[in-house]
Image (cartoon, helix red, strand yellow):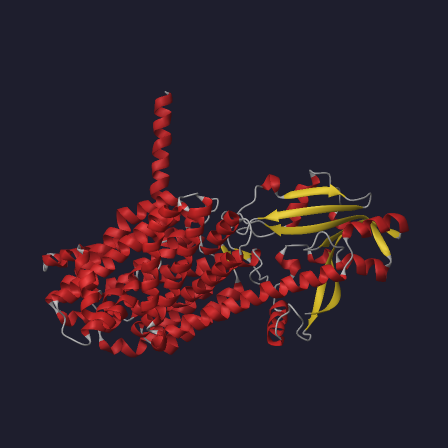
Length: 632
């Protein structure tokens, strides 16, 4: 009987594993799954524009693509990076948190790497929807040239619709992602497979000799082509970023059982087609299918690119919440679009900025070939950051011997840097775009972190220690009013500005006063039992600390409900929340401060930050704000 029960449990686990694997096909592999639309074409185009297409040329480019998939995706991400989970969560900021904990000391360099990686991810989030949707819609030209003038309007229309529906959440649509992308991968595999038999020698591309020979033979042009080969592995970072949604095993299973074989067959098929008909290089992906299947394939490709875009947009929302919680970005409104899944969120401001940036990108570059030059730098930059952070984790957190870390990571880092160098050759052709975008976002993040630190230190210098104020109040006995006052502060050892203003100007003290500090841990989630701690400072003064993981959204009323069990007695109708609001002014540059232009940038960011009342989900009718003017 017990044996049967175990068998049923094992069967349920297998069903869940395959179900999660199917879901990962729709979310995790959307980006890399649409790369065949343009990767082989762009990589071969650089060389074929200078000389006729030859067998060695096709085999060389294909060998580079296949070995990139094997080394950069399978070895680096599927086998190695997926092991570096932060309590089940992934992504560049999770990797940064792991590395900072592993070093447990001077982590400035690691923090800089995390900010750079996050900034470049936003560049990827802007380019992916643009190039993916545009490359799919360009397939309609093969049906009839009459559609040529409608490609840009159709692309912009689809992109607008994609961003407009974000506020409704993805729960209902996400259930279709996996099956649609599974059909897409199977269709790609079938389209490639039927052409391999036309030129069986295409299988020689598995020999890395052809990749090396291609680079040695074509040198500068070969290196430029290498920059386009990287397009075949864009989306590899998503394997790690979406780790928390599906888990390590389902992501690995989906890659080995479906995604990698389908990509391999399709690329081989495109190579065989170009060998037998060099003119097919114009659009080898869509020319793989017979004429009767062209329209269904264009429609399927459009659906696949929308799904790929959805995945990277969702990733941008998730990354933004992590950055806000870690104090790297200002507070922004975060809406939950699902009652069941806490990870499904919507950030209106991020969504709006992404939509504007994607549309401007499409209108500026106007074709997927032009956009291909801009794509690689953001992706390779993130991969280099990941490799550097993995070096720290393998050595300091996993305790690998230095020789073993060097043996594994140096070759992978050399490959990443080679791809980055190849893409830097395209700066003038469009590679400047992700560099400008990444540098702008990195500047915003560093300004916010630096400005917040300066203000915090200034507040500590200009304020009184909290314990000194508590001792003074015990002696002075100010006028007492009924009810509970909760003072939110980010510096628990210092008397909150709102408390001091209340005493100075209103000359009253509530019968119960609670100093509330909300802290963000380096872990993605905090155990609910450890979320709240309460201790008494005096008869009328208490300290409450609330902890959240960087993947969680603060909810102060829920935390207060948990605090009741720890002895905090209060009536919400007799409770007032006091918030200190700073009015900032730019001052003369002081030692250790920021330049005037950076002060003004910080002030602008602070003014546009989301209201603390909404961000912490505090009942607005119970909030009292007391202002203070500060010079930064």
